[in-house]
Length: 184
Image (tube, rainbow, N blue to C red; front, side, top):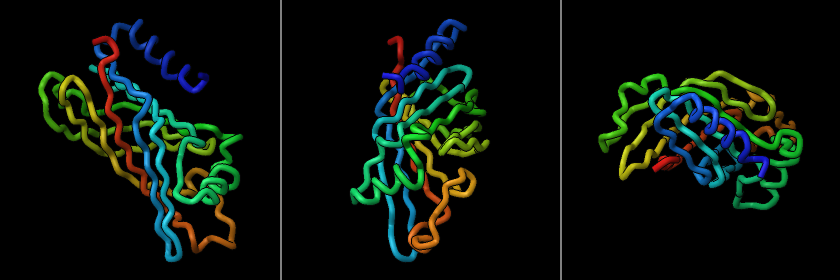
């Protein structure tokens, strides 16, 4: 229940400030993928909380680290215990803004390019990022899609020397969330 409080408080705060449209979901998708010479590593979470405020473009994402599922149980265990230390750093968050929100027509169905800037926090480390993606408006829903890379070193995620060749230093992250209006 605690995992939803941040999103709920943010939404309530935005509504009190007079924002007219709030789009939300709690089952978006984040996937990460790494390919090194010896092994491919990928995992998916379908428990991503997201809120988008229109017309400001404020956007927040939150995902519990333990919600990532791997094909191999041992990878999932190492990911949570050794690399992301999910007991100590239980979530990843993004708080930012769609900087070209004025170019997106929420009343007209279509696909719109979007530029997002904000702070991504993983493993207790926060980095300012700027990425591009798309927003698709269809049937009163907004689907956000993005694909980008992060460096493990930027988030102080250490790789032991014994497996350094198994894990790429760069991880590809794919985000896909479909949000609906909070107050239909």
